[in-house]
Image (cartoon, rainbow, N blue to C red; front, side, top):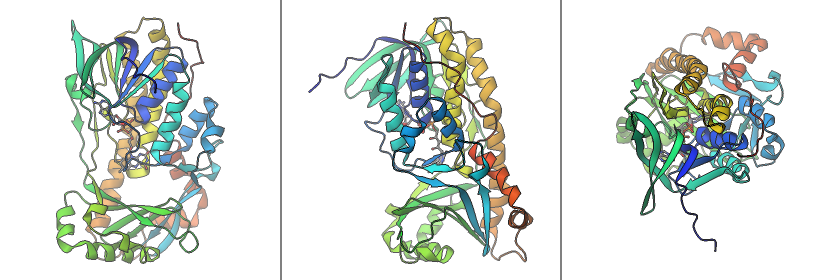
Length: 414
Ligand SMILES: Cc1cc2nc3c(=O)[nH]c(=O)nc-3n(C[C@H](O)[C@H](O)[C@H](O)COP(=O)(O)OP(=O)(O)OC[C@H]3O[C@@H](n4cnc5c(N)ncnc54)[C@H](O)[C@@H]3O)c2cc1C
């Protein structure tokens, strides 16, 4: 057995959080010759209730890195269109087939498989270090600048000094608070119940999409052997639902999608249903001298559109494009960090605004309804009649605004 590796005392960049943002950033910086340590508080990436989508924008990034072929060899599903059953009318909401290559589809893959894949690539680079089971517990500060991070790993405590600390510790970030950087809370009127139901590949439909009925919305992602389901509820209403009992909830789900009627029995109790408290927030300022926040830590996303992972990765790509050279050459300034926020703040805000609009204008009214509308909403009729229109939601979900390309080249560490 290999002896446990001693923690490093210093590095050029220490990333707190081994999610999509942190791991991709760690990989990209190490590939560009920067000395990086990524800290991940969990011992593995096997956590449930993370989104499972990899969008065309991320497929392009993987292609830039020469990793796409290997990535697509992992077991996954490819979704070419998103469909909806809206008050009984079937409609194709987004058609990815017309996106520029290598897009054309959305990949469904357990997020831990994606993270394991990136970690395996990164571990081949000499300047990359990943410390699993290592929690960032606070910042080391000197003369008003962040110069490192305090770490707890099992019962061992140590500090790593770094030219840059990156808070990529997700929507429950503690780095943000430790840095004294404020957050603007935008709120959300919905929560999401997240559960799995068995899928009968021979009998069940293949589509991935959603069902809307008066007072209810259900999203069903085809994961081959199971359905990953998201049931949207008004914020804070889980207790009311629980009072009605799990059997009533099973009936409600089966009433929304008849192909689930035989599967809902898998929901034995409320323990099988996980609550996601949706939150949307953002930091007015993402950085301080020696510190930068990216991904959900800088802008927690709603699950609407399932775009959070991809935005987090886009932040990582932009940060590595802008910071790799100054970091490698030991001349990083606060202006470099400001440039990352300038580049990524707008896409995050535009996406959040779209999510807020969908939550307020579409989801909340659906949840408040007791009867179906007299006719299906106009956008649904337009999508039914004008197939070309389906390219727009596909572009917004699949690529988003201001997509990033990898601009750094592989470089040997100094
Ligand atoms: C139920 C649900 C469904 C979603 N569905 C989708 C979807 O389908 N598609 C999509 O694109 N997005 C989806 N999202 C959003 C998406 O998961 C996030 O936007 C995305 O994961 C953000 O990536 P991140 O790297 O910024 O943060 P995270 O993925 O949250 O990663 C942060 C990492 O930091 C670690 N960490 C936290 N604190 C510390 C610490 N102090 N020290 C060390 N490590 C730490 C955490 O363990 C975690 O691994 C969903 C979110 C939820 C909750």
